[in-house]
Image 1 (cartoon, helix red, strand yellow):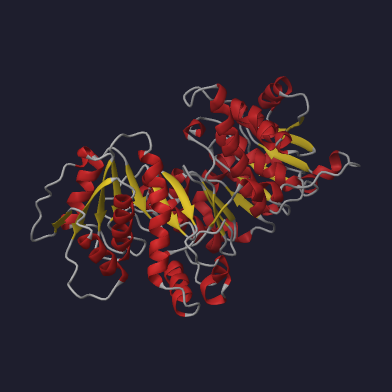
Image 2 (cartoon, rainbow, N blue to C red; image 1 turned 120 degrees about the horizontal axis):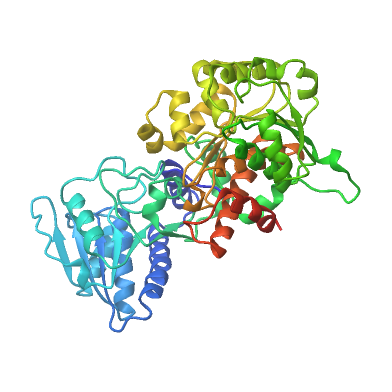
Length: 516
C-alpha cells in the first residue's frame, strides 16, 4: 500500500481538479461525508451528543465547516471554533462552507492572535473534530493554534482528526511545535507517510483511509510517481503472503538453503540459539553454527536440528583465528549471519573485519557486528555481496554519528540515506520499523507491539531474515518479510501472555503460527 507525501498529494488533487474536471468542492464534501461516518460511530451510544469542530482557515478548515453542517443536520448539537479570520468575499471552498455554517446559525466562536481568549471547555463536548491544519503544514504551530492544541489534548474526551492530526508533519511524522493527539484520524484518498512514522503514528490513533473520488491511477502518473523522495509502502497481509518464497512439493533441505551462523559467546550463548532457531522457523533448510565450544553445548540442548562446528576462540569469544581456513566453506552457504551475542573485544572486532573481507554470499549483520564495523564504516562499500544491517537507533547513532534524537526525529531519512550511501539494505528498528533499499525504495512496517522491547527479539529477527534469504528471497524482500512476521508473532504472543511477559522465545514460538 503506497503512502504519499504532501507534495504528491497536492499534485494528485490538482490533477484531479484541473485535468479531470472534478470540482474541488465535491472532494471537500466527500471528505466531510466520510469523516462524519466515523464521528457518528464514535457518538452512537451517547444520548444528546455534543460535538465541536476546531477549524482553521484553509482547506482543512473547509472540511471542518462541512463536517459541522452534516453533524448539525444529523441532529448532533454542534458548534465551530474558528482559529483565525476568514475574509468576507474570499473565493474558496472553505469560505463557501463557512457561509453555509453561518446561515444555518450553527454556533461559531472565533479566536485569533489578537483575540486569544479560548472561551470554551472541550470537556463539555463528547467529540472534538480537529480540522486546524492539513497535510501542507511546514512550520511550527504557534500563537493561538498552539494554545488551542494544548487545551484540546488536555481536556477533550475524544478527538478525531481530519486528514492528519494538526501539528504532525505529513512526510516525516515529526511534531511541529505541538500536535493534536487523536483517537482516530480520517485521511483521504491515500495514506500519508507521516501517519505511519513515529511520533506521528502515536498521535494519529486509529487510521481510516477513505475514498473521496480521486482516481487511484493518478498515483501512477510519471510526474507524481517519480516525486517520491519521502514516500514509502506499507506492507499489507496479502502483500506479505505474496512475497513468501514458494515451497515445492518435491524438495529437500538443499532447496531451502544453508545458513552459516557466527553468533554467541560464553557470556551470551542464547543469542546464537535464538537466531539459529528463527532460521528454521522461517523455513530455512539447514543451519550450521560455527561457534565457540561453550555455545555449541547450549545449542545442542536448545534445538537438535542445529549443526555445530567449533572454532578457535579467545576467552570465550571469536578472534581472527576463528575464521582461518573457512573461506571456501563460508562461500558455499546461501547466507551468513554475523553478530548476535559475539561480544565487543578487540579480537572479535578483528574477526568481523576479516569475515567481511572474504564473504561473497549475502550476509546479515546485527548487534555486535554493527559495533565492530562502526570504527571502519567504509568497509561496507567494499563488500562483494548483498548485505542487510539491522540497527536499533543507538546502533544507528554509532554508525552515522547522528544523535539518537536526530535519528528518531527523522528515522525515514536516517535509514534511506544510509542505505543509498553504503549500498546496504538498512532495517532501522523502531515502533514502526523502516526498511530502506539502496535503490531508494522504502517500506514502513506497522506490525508488532511493545512486547518486542525485550532482550533477544533482535536475534530472532536476524534469523528470520536469513531464513527467507536462504529460500531465495532477495535481501530487501527478506528483510520486509522478517520485520512483518516478527511483528505479527509479537501480536499473536500477547493474546496468551501480556505485553509485559512475552519473551524472545515466545516470539520464536509464534512465528510458525502467524505464517500458517
